[in-house]
Image 1: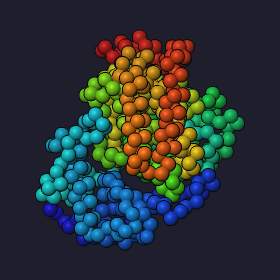
Image 2: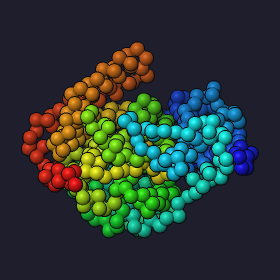
Image 3: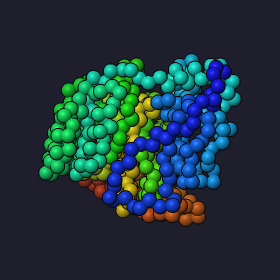
Image 4: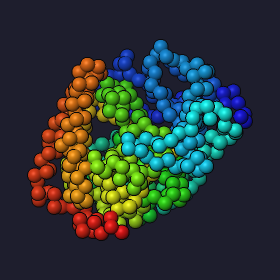
Length: 462
């Protein structure tokens, strides 16, 4: 099986940088430490400590998977590390080996359709060499990428984000910051980074800001991240590799938690699923769209707006972000509604977890509740928009049947065996759903579209 997988090195801590956050709850005994473990150089878990941890496993720069463990489950034994490596290797080889049908297509729930068995992975010849090849860092030039960051009144977070972008292995062609604040307070932050182009967009709304970023950008690929994010050093290079090798219009990537110190951060990550936990590439195409369309196409499973990129031609084909949606407007889902338009008209999106970012989740409980309310309100608004654009009744079915059923299931499950605080999050989601129903009756609002419906219908028919 090639050279021994577990004969070299020790756990090396790759925890992402932490910045002061005056709004955070105090770190407490229940905090989870985010650990990054490179299995390529590890045979002993010497960095476990006495704190519960979310361990994220890598093979060099290739993210493999993660495990949450309590203190009494740590440190991981050598046998556990071997098992983790074999399990993760099986998934990666199945998902990335063209001889096994890679890239995999997403199923109804947004998961891979097939996987290599653990036994097959353990018996695979030259497993280590295969992993080494898969984990080869991208050397693609990112000069055709415009990075767009939209920000509003979060100067320290923006500075942290820009610092991470300045450390890219392959520098992007440009970095555009769109300041959506009233007084342009991000200008002073941007002046610290000479490579940044600053734009002040006074009209409120994330979709408005993102559209301004698209219009101001100069290159063929437009990558978006948020001001509460730090990007991996290989982020732009991996985005460039995907668009050089794959015929897709859109890309999303892996969003990992930067820290899990507070209860709110842990609830969002563990109870709400964070921004996804899939570590293998997936294609979201017509098959996925048609399979999920009867119940409202599951486009929110494609990824997160904190880590996405598009070919400029995608905007030319289906239009820009819908300014009725997103933070500062209906609440959210401006990203997933655009993915819906792409898939509904024959396009495809690739989820590639090699493109990694680290997200700083809301640290306080009121902030998390506001976030979940906005997410659900925006989700309902996007379902209305999608129905109006394409007439797909699954969107209405989801509003009136699927979402209430989800609320009931969650309530019953939480009532008997739920974590503390989950009822409060559920209440915020129900509030958001109720607030979102208003958009069904706002007929003037419903007539404003990112692209005329006739254009979308004609594009779909091609």
